Length: 454
Image 1 (cartoon, rainbow, N blue to C red):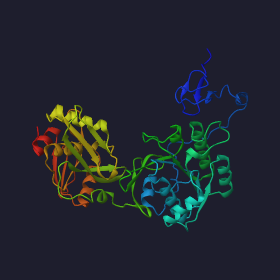
Image 2: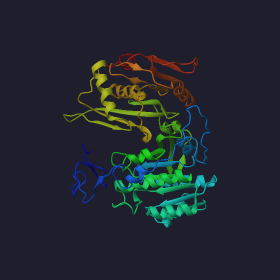
Image 3: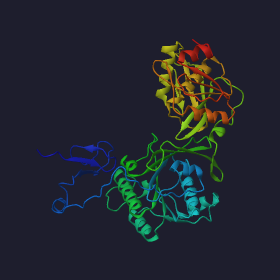
Image 4: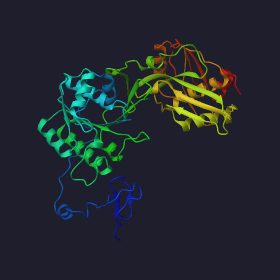
């Protein structure tokens, strides 16, 4: 039985069972094309007549030297990349508009150029004069970086073949268009084709390519997800407009640890690296305040301390409000449900606001106990000691579970002058008695023993 044909929209990537002039998903006209499999498409007879080459296989026990790396003068950038830039790697950097992606990569290109790499910066969104103005503002006017303003993929590849650089920055992939694809720049087909050609060029020539990608309103990199699978490393540049802090986070890295972060501070002269982010995130703390709790977290391989703030107030509405910044709203709802069902602490009729200070985004479950402590502190109008850190995961039964890297969390806390910690009962600790540790088996002990709520 013949396999049914499938059709794909070149604008949005939606699949269709039959061809039509207009895509039902995005409304684009004449954008639907048939997906022709290799076995039935052009050149199938030639493939069937000619045998392919034999692929060399190797054992799992074979030893290969690690890939060489080039370190820049930006330690935070090198940390996120896994120790430096690997030749032939393809890197995708995404972030909100105006967050500082172009500034970051112009500074990175200049630092790698100073480290000995031949760097080329191709802008598809700005003229070279605008890039030079930014470089002058950042104090990089004398950096050995060559600039270009072009959007044609064919012209860009021809230029790169002639110049033979070591590092190429493309700002951005959504502005690049290929004359072999019949769709507008920024469409799914164009982004996929441009990313494929540039990634193939990086592997073929041993050139490191950094691609800038726009993000959607949900915070995901715009375009087909296959682009994130093509590249070796995916980085997100995060931050809040009202804060000066910026977080460079690795969500995928074939040459280093994922979830590693680098912390920067946006200044008038560009992005300044933050060597000790914990001290910076906690720098504005004063006297103990209800709803304020310090969480000892782990971002990649780096322990980071940050302040979690909660506010609980009576609501004038029939439906209480739950507002979260820097944490998962679904996990907040779970913590509130556990406090009410397992501990008898009601939050009905109360608005709940939760904020991670400094613009940091937390995703690890170890923040559960710190969030619960902040909520109880705000509800009971009681403050925890200023020199106490909290961490632990909360289960639906109300039990507090141990988390990884307890010693690293406490070591970072001790370094910043903290003398107390509230953590799960099953946590494995060394013999260091420099901190007063309070272990709790479940959430009810935190509620009754520390806050006296219920």
